[in-house]
Length: 243
Length: 243
DNA sequence: GCGCACTACGTACGGTGTACGTAACTAGGA
DNA sequence: TCCTAGTTACGTACACCGTACGTAGTGCGC
Image 1 (tube, each protein chain N blue to C red):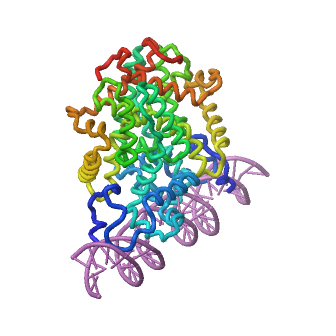
Image 2: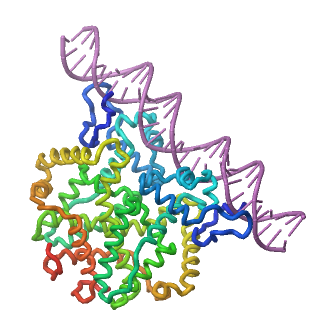
Image 3: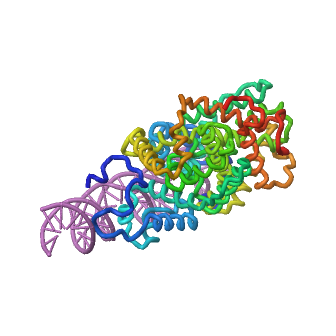
């Protein structure tokens, strides 16, 4: 009725079970799980209302009883995998705890490579996101700072992790929808890059690419970036700006 | 013919003008400009092959002579606006230069709010991206570090800027496609958040939201995050990790 | 037990990316 | 100089998308 009207709605605010009518055949968790299963297996682009409905075993339009818009389906998915975040008693060493949080987020994103693309601050208030944030703030209890600053740290850390994993996954995820392999594409791009650099217009880029990088350890690079960000927020280290 | 075969291709490697046949009616720059115009005006989702072709004034399928896949159209767009990056003679103060670069990127993203969504490392080797990277490396000449480390700094800085602007723009961009206003949606979400917090399960979140934030100055927050990241990379400051 | 709100779902519409076929055109090789 | 192969131009068609709408059937609250 007037339910589909142009009034904003947060999916978490509507009850799973309405008072009247027949009892819903699926729970929100069922739906999220189905969508996550599809995304894990076929990439985010495989998540369509039709596919999810088929995976659930119901008609396409029945899904709209549970999920008013596809955007809400995404919100369900993000919340579901956010629930995979393991929590622990804060150790007292906030840096160690935050490193652990970040690593956990990274492995989560490796397990669900579509997650970075859905990472959006507007999903920040789903039930499991609230739990996660509360846990982060608990880990930061030893830090002398306002909650505003702590939220900034969590946000920046999440952002950096998301960025890093996005980069790690970008080519892999991209090649999923392309009719050629990741290696082929890389080879062509590097060949083109080489031809450009050979022109001499980009001397520093040329130097950067002839420089022996040594063995590249993605994990180590990730760790280093992490530590740098945490260093920047450590109140015990000298700082050039007020917090 | 066998040109559309499953062989990877970088759009920058194919010549704008082929030897044979009639001369192309549009340049790559024309096409990129048309797409950018549409995205600026109607959001990234308004960029469809049909719309761009119409904006150019040609048939839909004619576009495919210039742009083999839509993905390449995106690549054209990112490169085009990357060309708006202004360059300057490095000042010798690399921190100041990098701050300037970051601010420029941010204003660029405010001018083209669809840019963050298209920021992908696979687009990193377009002509204007090469120019941009070379300029960044030139600004970092005073820094004693390998090019690898410098590239990491540029990457991390870009990532942080992208993250920040994404967050700034997320709700605004989202509300573009929704049938209600951003304020309405925010009000509903905050109301829900309040109801959750009132439950008492998230004491720190509750404290964070009752804490008087004072006047929030997005520019100042951005500047602070920026400085923290730069601090972390400054070799003249003590550091807890090898570079 | 009546009525109504809810569930279920088929159909249909307007949009998307793009494969394919055809016609016009032009530059290189004979 | 002419021929022909490769390009440009573009209409048609297909599979798929999100979702508005209408119609049954179901079971709770009054």
